[in-house]
Length: 573
Image (tube, rainbow, N blue to C red; front, side, top):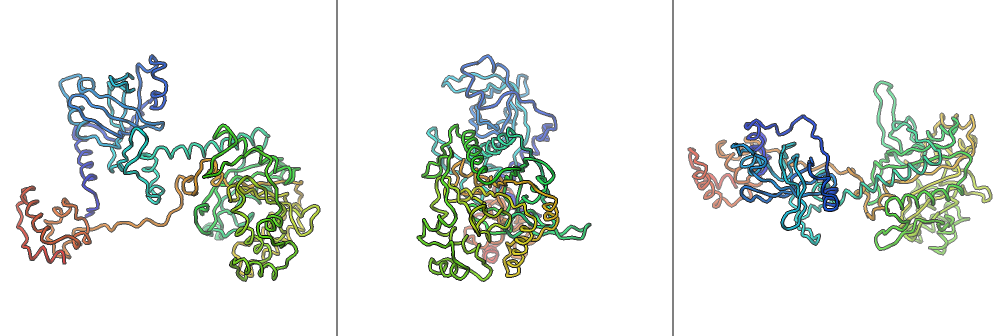
């Protein structure tokens, strides 16, 4: 027997049963055809009142003001809230007034979905309202929503603000904090604008495998699984790069994909183990061309969301209109540390890390050490969009060697507001060079680097058939949305961010109370008093509990023996 329901939940279940006893289905199957929405009514009624002489609207009840034979309520749909006016004799034109007196006033609750048919009018106080002529119950809510009080000036009291609760129960969050919906509306605009820009260029959206036999295309730790029928290990993709390049080999001039990537790594304000990335590959281009394309694309995205290319991010105004500043990897380290690491070997880099207080370990090769220095001393300074270019070859096994600078590759990363949001190469299409680079990655893996890339023989075989000169780009969509919506954590821009397992409240049974000496007949009484766990029983003052039990026995007219004070003290001890 579960006794985990709160008093409010029990009352709502009783209301549910009473609705059914009245012949009302609280969860009807029929479609409810809506023809009006709250925001449209509020924005346009006064200018065009004739359009709203017969409307059908649906949503959650969010507030109610019961006033005898007429009442007001607010319902919230996907666009906002609108007031409804309900008069008893309008929705109950016959002698039977049950729908108003019993159903609306007593059995409906905040959070219930209802449908309303009627007409829009202005109240005597000038408030736009829907005069209800027909009321339909669409869904009974069995859990009470958090009560968030909002003043006319926008002040919020008792807000549903705890981040863990908001992220874990996003369905509640977006109901009582509808202003957060704009984040996700703008997220959709970001993706749509980018997709539209690519389609205008004639590039094709494609899909590539999420389950992959080889985890390639990035330096990251994968999630591993096993396919039973094939009896083989598989990995959730850490990138889709190598499959998209196969399509360039196949003869497509430009392909792109918005897709989920998975990396079995740490979680923080800018990292989630499941994230969305866009990758695009265009034949006969290089990373210099790609810089210009990215500037044009991101300016298009910023304008789609804000109307202008300037975006407020925290205290900074970020201008996404190009051209963006360009710094080589080595020059950026020199600029912000005063140290020239361009000619250093692994030993020299280890000393620099030690001098700068940067932690290292034995798995780190030259490329990883340079990356650690850059991450620790440069990234946070890159506020306006900045290209960091020309990376050491050891850091980028999939990029083409620099056309004029030995030991470097043709790569850039775009940093905005101190974080990397894009990564691009002149793609390596020499199959012999590519094999040698991946073999070097195997050596790093042997040293214990669990982010080193794996050998993908099929990808190498594809390159041997010939891949044209190609430029590729990856953009972290979640981080881009953070910038475009002025959010400081990745969890705010994900509908359902990854969370630790929820700590479940122990489901207590009658037997748990009996084990403490409580007679079974008294357990429901304790529950009615709000004592639902043994822990709550132990924390109760036994003298007060004894007196309260006597009061409940009288109130509930219980014909059961009263426990002695000594027995109650034993329950609580």
